[in-house]
Image 1: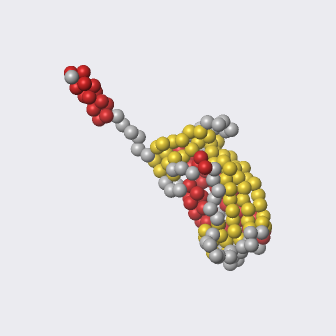
Image 2: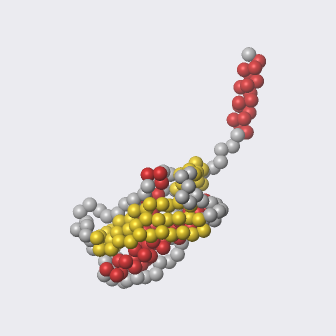
Image 3: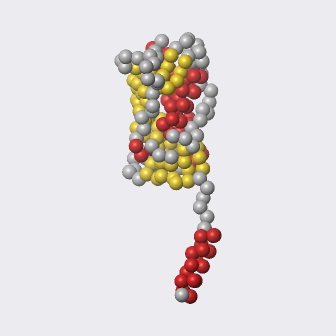
Length: 188
């Protein structure tokens, strides 16, 4: 009985003195002003962004180069659904590039002039190394005819913290938005 009481006391003490780190939450953000590409009135829709399944979680996932090892950070998380953040940030960037345009998510029954489809293959990196963003995008019309398509592979220094990693990914995503805006302008 005395041993049980001592063990119970030890567990209570460790429970009282143990410390769980606070979670930190991060948003992708517009880090720069996107240059105005065109002031024409145009209707653009952005579909859901395609992401690998392993990225469809609240935790930030890191991958070191082509290593199969993934680091899923329990205490460093996206503040919102990553697919929605990517889509909303892209819409904001395109709105800066086309200030007179109507740009929104693709709605059922709508017939925009241009529909942007993006598929991300890798949104990865490692702290203290590089951030990597690869994938492709298509610009199609309302009849789903492909008007333009392009692959992208972007790299930037990731920094040594999750904050700098997220800023690097935000910068890379803005570069992709610039490329999409340039391709749309070429189709106008």
